[in-house]
Image (cartoon, rainbow, N blue to C red; front, top):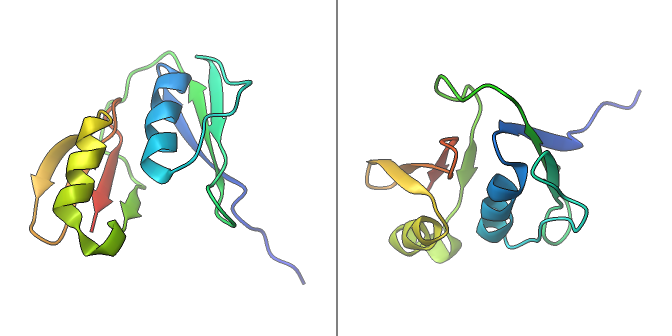
Length: 113
């Protein structure tokens, strides 16, 4: 019997293109050309991985994410990757040495290790 697979990961947000643009740059991909502030998506760079889908919702984020991404810094250079992501609009929440908790431009938490 075949099992399901993750087709996409969906983000609720205020501006779909803004958040999609951040994640596309962070992950080395592009925002789909048909994207709008209401809905946008980013296909994974290279082979594999789910598509990232971004949809506008009326309510603001109100609590910590219950699911988040852990990103591996290229070559183990965490400080360099944190600086690059900060330049794209992310902010550092907490630096635990080998693990840095960050937020994307709309406050969605993720980690860099």
